[in-house]
Length: 74
Image 1 (cartoon, rainbow, N blue to C red):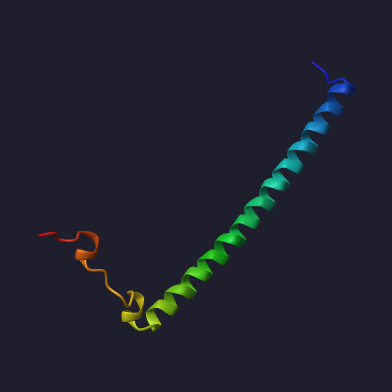
Image 2 (cartoon, helix red, strand yellow; image 1 turned 90 degrees about the vertical axis):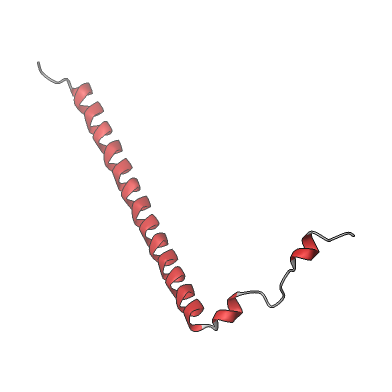
């Protein structure tokens, strides 16, 4: 069973399309990996800042009393 010229041209076009698709997919993966590294770096920086800060600063300075939410009526 032999290939006709039309079949060969179609196969070449298909192969070119597949190569382009794989190239675009690899580019997207590379871009995604860069973004993930950036996010990981930001998270590490924030963790360092939190560890270095005073633990009491993490909590709000004003406290809500339970009576504010549920007033007691006598």
